[in-house]
Structures are given as structure tokens and as C-alpha cells.
Image (cartoon, rainbow, N blue to C red; front, top):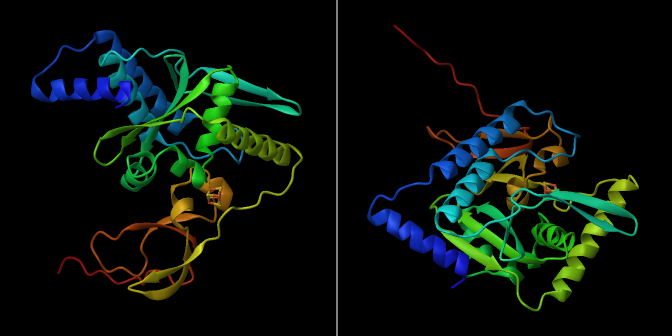
Amino acid sequence: MNNILLQVQQYLDSVSKKPVKLDKQLVQEFGEACKNALLKQFEEERKDKFEPMRNTFGDLIEALSIFVMKSAGVKLKNEQKKVEYKFDGGAIEGRQDVEIDGKVWDIKSASPYSFDKKFGEAGGFSEVAREDSFGYVSQGFLYGESQKKNFGGWIVVNKSTGEWAVCETPTEHEEYKKTALDNAKNNFKALTKGEPFKRCYDDVAETFRSKPTGNRVLGFVCSYCPYKLPCWGRDKLQLLPQQQSKGKNPKWVWYTSVTNPKEETEEYGGE
Ligand code: SF4
């Protein structure tokens, strides 16, 4: 088992058995990180129309993960350090999550599906790289390479169950690194040349009880993509309760087009 995961699991195991004393400085840092995540989400202006939507929940899980790792004795360095990857033709800026044992690591909160099938035991680094729609592999190698350090991989928390996983970059990773950096450089050049943005997925026809509704919705990958609002249009994309459902708690769906909206029913109150 990976050392980070071992330390975290031993700590969480001990906490589940009996109360432990918390380091007040770490509690203070955690409180600050949560406060900053909220201020960023609700008060800060978007830099440009392509800036992805902020994931406050992800930021809060990241703050909690850092708190748990530090409490468990994992030695973290250079949290949220600004980095810059320079290459012939430009420079890409970013902010790494943490450095542990000389390697750069990214912290992710994952849906139960991605946790199990991508980052967890049923998946692994090659599975994340196989369909890397959100550019996680490029991001990790860019952060590492900008400091001539190795990219360790992802420290992942299942946002439904709170389970942890560590998905490590394989020792033999030169081929992955080359592809990831080439992809990042090509995307950067396309963006700076003002080439039109090309969506990597189409929206899909919505079905309800196996019948097409006439509406169109985001597919699985797009619905989890942090760029979905700038990509599909902040005015066009709508998060609505499933329009044909008569249930009390319909599931929420990202609609790209609603031609068959929910029928309004008259509500009678009082007498
Ligand atoms: S929302 Fe846009 S950028 Fe994100 S996966 Fe879908 S098509 Fe690609």
C-alpha cells in the first residue's frame, strides 16, 4: 500500500476508535482554507469567459484532505504553489496542490463511479490516462515538469463515502509524460492563435422511461466537466429537475435545450 494512504488510514482508524487531540494551528488553517473557498466561489469575479466554474465542494474536500494528511503526519510542502511551465512558444501557469517526498501530487474529490472505476483498484493511472477528458494527466505532468520534479499522482477522496485512494504515476512514465505535455502545448497554441474551440463531445437526446422527451442534455463526461458552463454557454445550459418526472424529488439534469418543458399544474391552496 502507498505510504501516504497507509498513514492516513492508520490515523482515521485511530480517530474512529477514540478521540484524539487536534493541533490547533491545523484547525485554524483548515478554517481559513474553507473561508477562502467560499469567498472565491461567491465574491470573486471570473477572469474570462473560459474560466471553469468553481467547485467549492471540491475545495472544501481538498482543505479537509490536507488537514487529515497533516494530522496523520504526512509531510506536505509547497501547498498551492504557483508554477509556470515554459516552452518554446509560450508558458502555461498553474497552481499545484501539494508536494510530498519530492513529488508533486494533485488532490481530487471523485464521484463514486470515478473513484471505483478510474482512480481506485479497478482503474489506475493507465485508466485515467485512457480517457482523460478533463486533462488531469497533462495538469499533473505540467506542474511536475515546471519544477523538474516527478508527478506522484492523485490523492483521491470519494465524495459520497469519504474513502481515500492514492493513484500513483507508474515508474515507467516517459511515454505518458511526452503525450501529456505535447497535448497541453498544442491546446495552448490553438487557444492563443484564437482557433475556434471544438467541443470534444456532443450533447445527447434525453429519454425518460426509455422514450425520447425531445429535450437535449449533457452526456456523462460533460456533466462532470468543470468547463461545462463556458463550453456550452452560461445562458444556454440549465440545471433543472427532470422535466417529465412527477416524483417529489426528481433528479437534476443539465439541459442544453428544453423543447418539451415540465407541464405547469395548477395548485389549489386553502379552502
Ligand atoms: S463540457 Fe465541453 S470541454 Fe467539457 S468534456 Fe464536454 S465538450 Fe469537452
